[in-house]
Amino acid sequence: MIKTLLTRLEQGNKTSAYPKKPVTLIEEYRGLPEIKQDCADNLVQLCSENCPQDAIDPVAKRVDLGKCVFCGACEQLSEGRFVHFTNNHELGVSDRQQLLVDSAVQRLSILADNRIKKLFGRSLQLRQVSAGGCNACEADVNVLGTPFFDLARFGIQFVASPRHADGMLVTGPVTVNMKTALLKTYEAIPEPKLVIATGACAISGGPFFNSPQSLDGVASLIPVDLFIPGCPPHPLTTLHALLQFLGKI
Image (tube, rainbow, N blue to C red):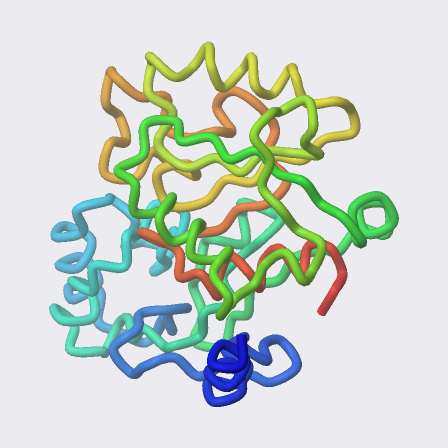
Protein backbone atom coordinates (compact mmCIF):
# COMPACT_ATOMS: atom_id res chain seq x y z
CA MET A 1 0.00 0.00 0.00
CA ILE A 2 2.80 2.42 0.88
CA LYS A 3 4.52 1.63 -2.42
CA THR A 4 1.30 2.36 -4.30
CA LEU A 5 0.85 5.70 -2.52
CA LEU A 6 4.45 6.69 -3.21
CA THR A 7 4.03 5.83 -6.89
CA ARG A 8 0.86 7.92 -7.04
CA LEU A 9 2.63 10.88 -5.47
CA GLU A 10 5.52 10.51 -7.88
CA GLN A 11 3.27 10.39 -10.94
CA GLY A 12 1.07 13.29 -9.86
CA ASN A 13 -2.18 14.32 -11.54
CA LYS A 14 -2.24 13.17 -15.18
CA THR A 15 -5.59 14.75 -16.08
CA SER A 16 -5.49 17.64 -18.53
CA ALA A 17 -6.38 21.09 -17.17
CA TYR A 18 -8.40 21.77 -20.33
CA PRO A 19 -10.64 23.77 -20.68
CA LYS A 20 -9.33 25.93 -17.82
CA LYS A 21 -6.01 26.07 -19.64
CA PRO A 22 -5.81 26.15 -23.46
CA VAL A 23 -4.11 23.31 -25.32
CA THR A 24 -1.89 23.92 -28.35
CA LEU A 25 -1.69 20.94 -30.66
CA ILE A 26 1.37 20.02 -32.72
CA GLU A 27 2.13 21.99 -35.87
CA GLU A 28 1.37 18.99 -38.09
CA TYR A 29 -2.23 18.80 -36.85
CA ARG A 30 -4.74 19.91 -39.48
CA GLY A 31 -7.61 21.85 -37.94
CA LEU A 32 -9.82 24.73 -39.01
CA PRO A 33 -8.66 25.83 -42.49
CA GLU A 34 -8.05 29.38 -43.64
CA ILE A 35 -9.50 29.96 -47.10
CA LYS A 36 -7.93 32.68 -49.25
CA GLN A 37 -10.47 34.21 -51.60
CA ASP A 38 -7.81 36.06 -53.61
CA CYS A 39 -6.36 32.79 -54.87
CA ALA A 40 -6.24 32.34 -58.66
CA ASP A 41 -9.31 30.59 -60.08
CA ASN A 42 -7.27 27.99 -61.96
CA LEU A 43 -5.50 26.96 -58.76
CA VAL A 44 -8.81 26.60 -56.90
CA GLN A 45 -10.13 24.53 -59.80
CA LEU A 46 -7.06 22.29 -59.60
CA CYS A 47 -7.64 21.72 -55.89
CA SER A 48 -11.31 20.97 -56.52
CA GLU A 49 -10.54 18.41 -59.22
CA ASN A 50 -8.07 16.60 -56.96
CA CYS A 51 -10.18 16.61 -53.80
CA PRO A 52 -11.06 12.97 -53.07
CA GLN A 53 -14.18 14.05 -51.18
CA ASP A 54 -15.64 16.57 -53.63
CA ALA A 55 -15.50 18.98 -50.67
CA ILE A 56 -14.34 22.07 -52.58
CA ASP A 57 -16.70 24.44 -54.38
CA PRO A 58 -14.46 26.17 -56.96
CA VAL A 59 -17.03 28.87 -57.75
CA ALA A 60 -17.69 29.97 -54.16
CA LYS A 61 -14.09 29.12 -53.19
CA ARG A 62 -15.12 27.28 -50.08
CA VAL A 63 -14.49 23.97 -48.35
CA ASP A 64 -17.19 21.76 -46.84
CA LEU A 65 -15.71 20.49 -43.58
CA GLY A 66 -18.60 18.04 -43.32
CA LYS A 67 -17.14 16.20 -46.33
CA CYS A 68 -13.45 17.00 -45.80
CA VAL A 69 -11.18 14.26 -44.43
CA PHE A 70 -8.34 16.75 -43.84
CA CYS A 71 -5.97 14.91 -46.18
CA GLY A 72 -4.15 18.17 -46.91
CA ALA A 73 -4.04 17.69 -50.70
CA CYS A 74 -5.53 21.15 -51.36
CA GLU A 75 -2.94 22.83 -49.15
CA GLN A 76 -0.10 20.95 -50.82
CA LEU A 77 -1.33 21.60 -54.38
CA SER A 78 -1.89 25.30 -53.74
CA GLU A 79 1.22 25.61 -51.55
CA GLY A 80 -0.98 27.35 -49.00
CA ARG A 81 -2.21 29.99 -51.45
CA PHE A 82 -5.79 28.69 -51.37
CA VAL A 83 -6.06 26.60 -48.20
CA HIS A 84 -3.96 26.66 -45.07
CA PHE A 85 -4.84 24.32 -42.22
CA THR A 86 -4.39 25.87 -38.78
CA ASN A 87 -4.06 23.87 -35.55
CA ASN A 88 -7.40 25.18 -34.23
CA HIS A 89 -9.26 22.08 -33.01
CA GLU A 90 -12.55 23.85 -32.23
CA LEU A 91 -14.57 22.52 -35.16
CA GLY A 92 -17.95 21.45 -33.74
CA VAL A 93 -21.12 23.22 -34.94
CA SER A 94 -24.83 23.00 -34.25
CA ASP A 95 -25.71 24.26 -37.75
CA ARG A 96 -24.55 22.12 -40.70
CA GLN A 97 -24.23 25.24 -42.88
CA GLN A 98 -21.43 26.56 -40.68
CA LEU A 99 -19.20 23.78 -41.98
CA LEU A 100 -19.07 25.55 -45.34
CA VAL A 101 -15.88 27.54 -44.77
CA ASP A 102 -14.97 30.33 -47.18
CA SER A 103 -12.97 32.81 -45.12
CA ALA A 104 -9.54 33.22 -43.62
CA VAL A 105 -11.02 34.55 -40.38
CA GLN A 106 -14.09 32.33 -40.06
CA ARG A 107 -14.82 30.89 -36.65
CA LEU A 108 -17.14 27.99 -36.00
CA SER A 109 -19.55 28.11 -33.10
CA ILE A 110 -22.17 26.11 -31.27
CA LEU A 111 -25.36 27.72 -30.05
CA ALA A 112 -25.63 26.67 -26.41
CA ASP A 113 -29.37 26.27 -25.88
CA ASN A 114 -30.47 27.21 -22.34
CA ARG A 115 -32.97 24.35 -22.45
CA ILE A 116 -30.21 21.87 -23.32
CA LYS A 117 -28.02 23.28 -20.57
CA LYS A 118 -30.82 23.01 -18.01
CA LEU A 119 -31.70 19.44 -18.98
CA PHE A 120 -28.27 17.94 -19.59
CA GLY A 121 -25.72 20.45 -18.29
CA ARG A 122 -24.99 18.47 -15.11
CA SER A 123 -25.44 14.96 -16.48
CA LEU A 124 -25.41 13.70 -20.06
CA GLN A 125 -25.63 9.97 -20.79
CA LEU A 126 -24.84 8.94 -24.35
CA ARG A 127 -25.22 5.72 -26.29
CA GLN A 128 -22.48 5.36 -28.90
CA VAL A 129 -23.57 3.79 -32.19
CA SER A 130 -21.05 2.68 -34.80
CA ALA A 131 -23.11 2.76 -37.98
CA GLY A 132 -20.52 1.11 -40.20
CA GLY A 133 -17.47 3.09 -39.06
CA CYS A 134 -13.86 2.04 -39.64
CA ASN A 135 -13.18 2.29 -35.86
CA ALA A 136 -11.00 5.42 -36.09
CA CYS A 137 -13.71 7.76 -34.77
CA GLU A 138 -14.77 5.13 -32.25
CA ALA A 139 -11.19 4.79 -30.97
CA ASP A 140 -10.75 8.53 -30.50
CA VAL A 141 -14.09 8.75 -28.69
CA ASN A 142 -12.95 5.94 -26.37
CA VAL A 143 -9.82 7.97 -25.58
CA LEU A 144 -12.04 10.51 -23.81
CA GLY A 145 -12.54 7.97 -21.04
CA THR A 146 -8.83 7.82 -20.19
CA PRO A 147 -7.40 9.65 -17.16
CA PHE A 148 -5.90 12.40 -19.35
CA PHE A 149 -9.28 13.60 -20.70
CA ASP A 150 -11.54 12.12 -17.98
CA LEU A 151 -14.84 12.93 -19.70
CA ALA A 152 -16.80 11.78 -16.65
CA ARG A 153 -15.57 14.76 -14.59
CA PHE A 154 -17.91 16.90 -16.71
CA GLY A 155 -20.88 14.63 -16.02
CA ILE A 156 -20.73 13.05 -19.49
CA GLN A 157 -20.75 9.27 -19.72
CA PHE A 158 -21.43 6.50 -22.21
CA VAL A 159 -24.04 3.90 -21.31
CA ALA A 160 -24.79 0.43 -22.61
CA SER A 161 -28.54 0.79 -23.17
CA PRO A 162 -30.30 3.48 -25.21
CA ARG A 163 -33.11 3.36 -22.63
CA HIS A 164 -30.66 4.78 -20.09
CA ALA A 165 -29.39 7.46 -22.49
CA ASP A 166 -30.19 11.12 -23.11
CA GLY A 167 -28.95 10.91 -26.67
CA MET A 168 -26.65 9.07 -29.01
CA LEU A 169 -23.29 9.76 -30.57
CA VAL A 170 -23.12 8.23 -34.04
CA THR A 171 -20.02 7.35 -36.05
CA GLY A 172 -19.85 5.82 -39.51
CA PRO A 173 -21.66 6.56 -42.79
CA VAL A 174 -24.81 4.63 -41.78
CA THR A 175 -24.58 1.56 -43.95
CA VAL A 176 -27.74 0.00 -45.32
CA ASN A 177 -27.30 -2.90 -42.89
CA MET A 178 -27.16 -0.49 -39.92
CA LYS A 179 -30.19 1.60 -40.87
CA THR A 180 -32.71 -0.44 -38.85
CA ALA A 181 -30.41 -0.72 -35.83
CA LEU A 182 -29.83 3.04 -35.81
CA LEU A 183 -33.54 3.83 -36.05
CA LYS A 184 -34.40 1.36 -33.29
CA THR A 185 -31.73 2.86 -31.04
CA TYR A 186 -33.08 6.34 -31.69
CA GLU A 187 -36.63 5.24 -30.93
CA ALA A 188 -35.54 3.58 -27.67
CA ILE A 189 -34.03 6.78 -26.26
CA PRO A 190 -36.62 8.66 -24.19
CA GLU A 191 -37.64 12.20 -25.09
CA PRO A 192 -36.13 14.75 -25.10
CA LYS A 193 -33.08 13.32 -26.85
CA LEU A 194 -29.97 14.49 -28.64
CA VAL A 195 -28.17 13.21 -31.73
CA ILE A 196 -24.49 13.88 -32.33
CA ALA A 197 -22.85 13.10 -35.69
CA THR A 198 -19.13 12.52 -35.20
CA GLY A 199 -16.70 12.37 -38.12
CA ALA A 200 -16.97 12.98 -41.85
CA CYS A 201 -18.75 9.65 -42.39
CA ALA A 202 -21.55 10.40 -39.93
CA ILE A 203 -21.98 13.92 -41.32
CA SER A 204 -21.85 13.29 -45.07
CA GLY A 205 -20.87 9.69 -45.77
CA GLY A 206 -17.14 10.45 -45.76
CA PRO A 207 -15.13 8.36 -48.24
CA PHE A 208 -18.29 6.30 -48.84
CA PHE A 209 -20.50 9.17 -50.06
CA ASN A 210 -22.77 8.26 -52.97
CA SER A 211 -22.21 4.57 -52.31
CA PRO A 212 -25.28 2.37 -52.80
CA GLN A 213 -24.32 0.61 -49.56
CA SER A 214 -24.50 3.72 -47.32
CA LEU A 215 -26.96 6.52 -46.62
CA ASP A 216 -24.51 9.45 -46.63
CA GLY A 217 -24.72 10.28 -42.96
CA VAL A 218 -27.06 10.42 -39.99
CA ALA A 219 -29.09 13.47 -41.04
CA SER A 220 -30.53 11.50 -43.96
CA LEU A 221 -32.52 9.50 -41.38
CA ILE A 222 -32.93 11.52 -38.19
CA PRO A 223 -32.40 15.14 -37.06
CA VAL A 224 -28.91 15.98 -35.83
CA ASP A 225 -28.23 18.46 -33.01
CA LEU A 226 -24.42 18.57 -33.11
CA PHE A 227 -21.91 18.02 -35.92
CA ILE A 228 -18.26 17.21 -35.11
CA PRO A 229 -16.13 17.08 -38.31
CA GLY A 230 -12.84 15.25 -38.82
CA CYS A 231 -11.46 11.94 -40.00
CA PRO A 232 -11.35 11.15 -37.20
CA PRO A 233 -12.05 14.21 -35.03
CA HIS A 234 -9.32 14.83 -32.48
CA PRO A 235 -10.47 13.93 -28.95
CA LEU A 236 -10.13 17.60 -28.02
CA THR A 237 -12.42 18.52 -30.91
CA THR A 238 -15.10 16.21 -29.55
CA LEU A 239 -14.55 17.35 -25.96
CA HIS A 240 -14.74 21.03 -26.87
CA ALA A 241 -17.91 20.49 -28.92
CA LEU A 242 -19.65 18.64 -26.09
CA LEU A 243 -18.66 21.20 -23.46
CA GLN A 244 -19.71 24.15 -25.60
CA PHE A 245 -22.96 22.45 -26.55
CA LEU A 246 -23.79 22.01 -22.86
CA GLY A 247 -22.79 25.56 -22.04
CA LYS A 248 -19.87 24.50 -19.86
CA ILE A 249 -17.37 26.77 -21.65
